[in-house]
Length: 282
Image (cartoon, rainbow, N blue to C red; front, side, top):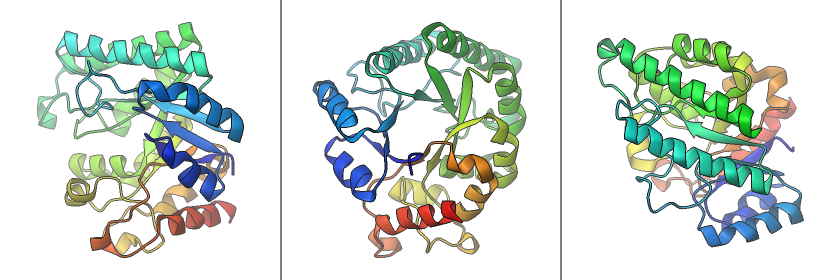
């Protein structure tokens, strides 16, 4: 399945997680700069489709974690730092031929309580999207925005308004577990949220969680058929069903490592890959 792939920040995982599972797609981020030429050779050798989760290379001048974004931050210097990182990522996408890039929006949270979300923050968010869209058109690189964090900006009303204005060239990366965490924080229905964003989706990140405690303890948990929605997990089968015909064409990226947390069960992540393949085939 050419639309299924893995998220990798180490090239030694490419053979195991992508090729070893019979997949033909990769999403790469935060690699050592010296790995770029080898990455290109491996992509060409295995004939992979691929994308970049900004940034592609490790940056000593950007805050950790490197996937943070400050596009909705009130501090203009922070916003410019993120735009600098995105421009560098687009340079790499152009040079090496990536299909699209993923940019977090907004992370960390740009405001705390929802009731304090003012017009200034909304205006900053809109301006950042305007800049991303202009950059995408000018450089010819598609940008997928991924909602991450507890910000009240992550809701269907705001995001669909933005994407109606800017799609294309901006698309949405729907992240199963980050969206679930946002739904818990902002009190909305995950599956209705997915349906509203469906016309604007460009890609999907697949991993699982039951909530903040899981995320704090285990971060990105591999999807697995043992994860029941009745026990609080994201219903991955339902997520894929909502995608319907798009599910066989959108890039679907497993965004987890190989190790399943032993405290949650002695499972093999490859069982989850096989399960998703079966769900997509039905």
